[in-house]
Length: 189
Image (cartoon, rainbow, N blue to C red; front, side, top):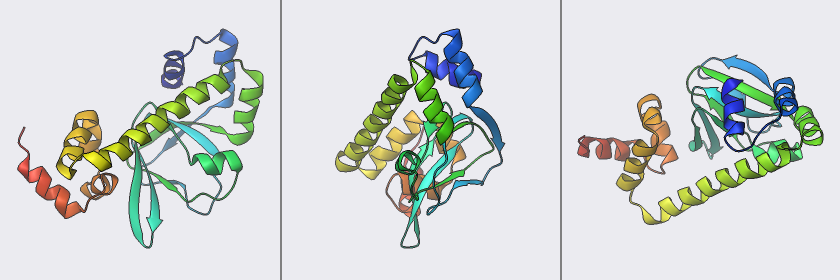
């Protein structure tokens, strides 16, 4: 809970009542590696805060796994469309490592929004941050070579580079695993 409160307080000043609301509506869940948190076709019931570990979000497109999200500690994730509209998700979310999650259900999310002064503005800030990351990722695909994307990835996320499989990293970066292996052999540190 401490990591979540620190994350929120880095963006907002919380009153003691706000802290109590967060502690009331979020629950902790310890999840082993390779556990599916969401499967396509099911409705997303939670927004998660990753306190410890690594999570991947992906889609199965014509039998090919396409990794779209590699979530690191101290960040939120969910299948947002599914969560907000309570309709079937297109995404899968799965733990890569053992994870400590904090989660809030849709009914509790709505209650927190109704009972707090900060939650709506906080969610807007987090959503904007995530949108900006997605826009930067799209731009990287347009202007950077595969090698440049990988170098940027390892600079920004060294923990992911060490703890996520080559297949998942390659998919996330939009390349085949063989191409990433060749790039990795070319790089000396």
